[in-house]
Length: 248
Image 1 (tube, rainbow, N blue to C red):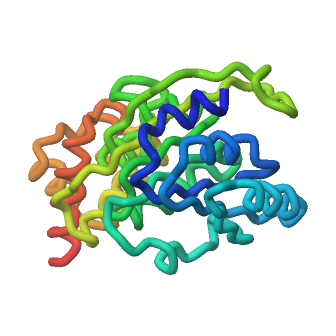
Image 2: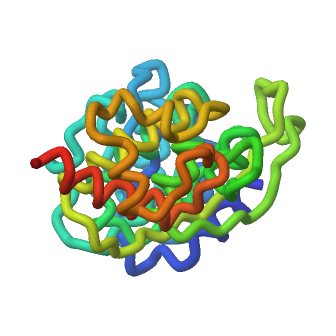
């Protein structure tokens, strides 16, 4: 299974590969077999240090091991060349989304991410409007990445065995046309809209503290519509118009 996961990331011989949370090194071994150009792991649990260091010694390709919490780690120290990194990881379920949002800051450096998520979280990432899983995560991640669902993995494939299925996704960074302020506005608009998803937008967006009727009129969205009905491209228009209106 680990070989299958790594194979899904494509050719690694011309890439810098980063693995997040290698643990005892099951996935690490499969990455080594694919002969990455450079290979780095980030692991916060020092209990795995000897296992990982032994793996590095036995490997023909030296593994650089950083002992740190990936959520707190400053990847600016690491990323140098745009589009030359592949990230492969079986992410800890409790931090999978915070880590994915963190990678948004560095997406220009990343060629692809091959990540394992809890199936429910993967469904949220992939969801489309009028689906109960559609939300803020769907809008922001789909706006920034082209996403390919690869396959589900039975809990029996893991030890210790989790209670849920997992899903492997490939994410490929998209070029986006909005600036930093509009990106922040997209985050604020989706947070407000989906924070009260059953309310109409004219009510849920009130916390933005601008003229909501004007915002919706400029975006050509009906005041009675709810967040779960709004396509991603309409949220982008909302964010851009909100950016302009809050500067007035």
